[in-house]
Length: 257
Image 1 (cartoon, rainbow, N blue to C red):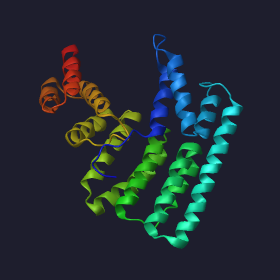
Image 2: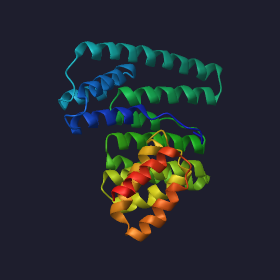
Image 3: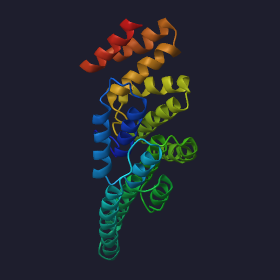
């Protein structure tokens, strides 16, 4: 993980679509959202996620889809495990580690979160930076499923590794994760502090888009900060960021307020 832009986490994207299906108004095209969610599920073999949606009456039962996804998943995992054994005999530690990470990524999308977490935990003998990345993967799982106990358990280990490494890139990413966790538990005061702190160095595109980050920061700040402090800490700070859509969001929010 580096300072380059990363794609949004698939599990989080699917979770957002699921949320919209159950919380959007009738004016929204729910069929379009549902089709997009089903496409995401099938493309990424999200077996457990689909079954949970069915249990919650969000999606319709489809045994044919489950069978197809299971078959593809087993083929992919078998191929990766075969490659893992080959790498253990013929390649170095980096090649072995990379296959283990690919297996963990597949399991994260297809299996129950507890199985996924165990798979990430099983990857050992890696650098401090890679350890942090793996812990951030677990934190994303916790955020996707709003598992606060899971998040609290692994955030301690993650922050300890970050402090020992002195890695500012990963530290900034971690603070964004923590800000979203605070939003989930309605601790808007702490969320506001971290959102405003991380905006200038924001790179955590794997968990939230920059525009959505700005929206959260502005909306929460409006209700958390006095008007004078709001304009000093938020308005002036955000308008210095040279991004057109950011300025539009800030202007609209403050003019409405």
